[in-house]
Length: 521
Image (cartoon, rainbow, N blue to C red):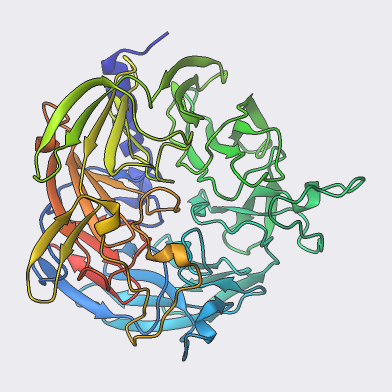
């Protein structure tokens, strides 16, 4: 059974409006005011941070970090590591700093420190202590230290409460971004905060040992006190991005997943839709077992349909029952606007197979549903992909691995991964923050990348090397005409980011290891 295009469009419009009364035009958390990375509005599609074109202001940060910028009215919030003095110190980090910025000019108004309980590598391709965006409701702001603390502050930086916990370090989560919902913070944490069992990568759980205490689960925290109100009982792998929404009967729920490489503990692998309703929060409405599931995604869903990637397949499920509605292979017999070597042109190839054999076909966390299409960045080629939710049609549009702008002002489109300019992973003071050699890669494929955002009809895909692709979701065909802009967040080779963009009132906000800036002058 398939929904009509009108039904899909209505569901999409409803998703843009579900939080509008609460947050208006602000960007209060990682996924924006509608908790789905999508907003109505209009933002510029052309800029260059390297050439300072269409940049309203920029502020140098004293230290690096990964969180995106949270925006409320005239304030912006982000996190960095506690300032590090040498590359030796920069290999791991425990404590972070939360910032409040004046959005009129980018000036730093105040800072707070959040000590952690464990150390994590800096500028990692999957995580660090600063990965989670702050959250605000206009009266309070919550900062999150992936190394083991959550703090609540008023808008003058005065602490309201500070909560410590010990996270599991077997896998470090990049995209399990906390969510604010009805004065509750939804966070993914280990169940038993005092558990000492630590399973190393790919090692089996010792016989006779109950691993459930060190599974990670969605917790509902009282936003006013930090106290745990409830814990779901299905488990959530920490590479997954749980996403909230409403069922057709008005009940709120959260979609989350288990599975992935390196044998995560939470089983059985698959998807669960868990209720957020008072009195049964944390109770599963349904679970769907999927042994090959790729959980390194944003769990987009609406009142009718939920979406997943299972091996090489894109899967559509009935949101009310979890029943599988359709399944489409996104590797074979696809249409591809393929790059023509030696030029910047593309030619259409119909019914072709993608190269490679890996089942993980999307760059992690780059998927977003817009209208009748599910968009994503490919994994083994530099292309934007999309699958039609009704017909199952699969299309790919080749894009350059990198738009490289050099200090002399020259600009080059790089189409081969081997020719990409290696990224220097340094902070604004020239201290190397690299704790993982993969951090110098292209930003495609095996990386927990920044999630794209939709503003009006345009999709903004930032990648680790600072390139930002802008896609027109209303283009008549998915050719090079759909790629309306190739922008940069700084000079080639010296720009590094895993942060999503934010949007408020015609302006985009971005941050790198070195700076934060406002786009749209």
